Length: 139
Picture 1 (tube, one colour):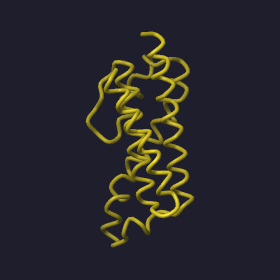
Picture 2: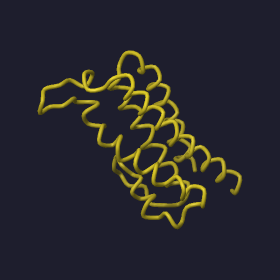
Picture 3: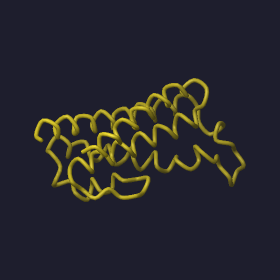
Picture 4: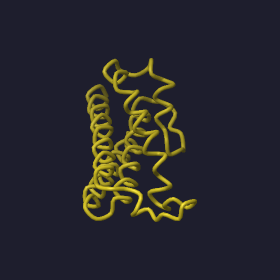
């Protein structure tokens, strides 16, 4: 439980960093939003006693174990998986830019895209928080 709670603490910090970057560094906002999603999903997996893969897109494991999830979470797993997959694909470009086209990361994203990434990360984090609270009550 300590590791899952630690993932959530770090995910919350990543969301704060993303919020700070919203106005001036859209690539960093996208990057830290991705990290918040990854950590939130890994927290959910750990809390539910599932394998926590050492990859940047861990939501596949949630999909594989959908039948083991609480019913309310089963309804959310497709959205979580979509967000996790989408932002995991942005991880590298948000850090390195588009190397083939020679576009730096700060020119790849606008504020609207950044806001969408941040809102999506908040959504996944809030679900992870709910899983954590429910797990705490049942322990």
